[in-house]
Length: 220
Image 1 (cartoon, rainbow, N blue to C red):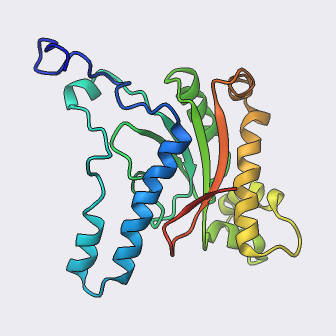
Image 2 (tube, rainbow, N blue to C red):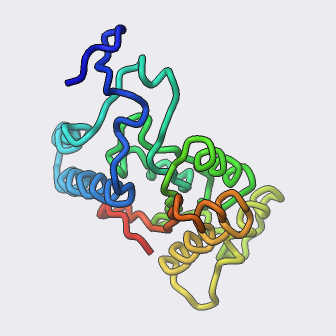
């Protein structure tokens, strides 16, 4: 271990200490840990047993930095654009520690203006090397976009980009995956910052879906 930095923190610990070499691999490994615990929880028959099953997360596979380091800044190694659905928490889904992920959430995980601006900051300033757009099973926003029931003006605005991603006759699961792909494609179409980063190899953009039943994330 390196010598002490003078404030009780090892000198080799900084905001980039937890960055993996392969961000996508690290995300999927974290999700594998989550899915294993999630499925054990699903099979448990009592609240205490379900809590015990989930207690395996945030274990030795995580990198936890002291507050003194975190107070100096952030260097997230992945950005997640996900749905605001209460069942879909990226930090849980990827078994991630504080400071690992830069997360933007909105119903339907659409590439809305503020989301793109936030991702520009993450990539240009924080040098985040990976963006994942993550849809999820049983997404209410995608269901609303597929339906013809009347919506409020603001909800109509929210589902407009989802409707642009839909293909007639497709299943709900296919629509959810297609919406994630469409949003991922919009990032570089609508942001020169993200397009340049993707073109020069400093940024990878992927889309995925999270299955609430199994707890698994699949890249699509």
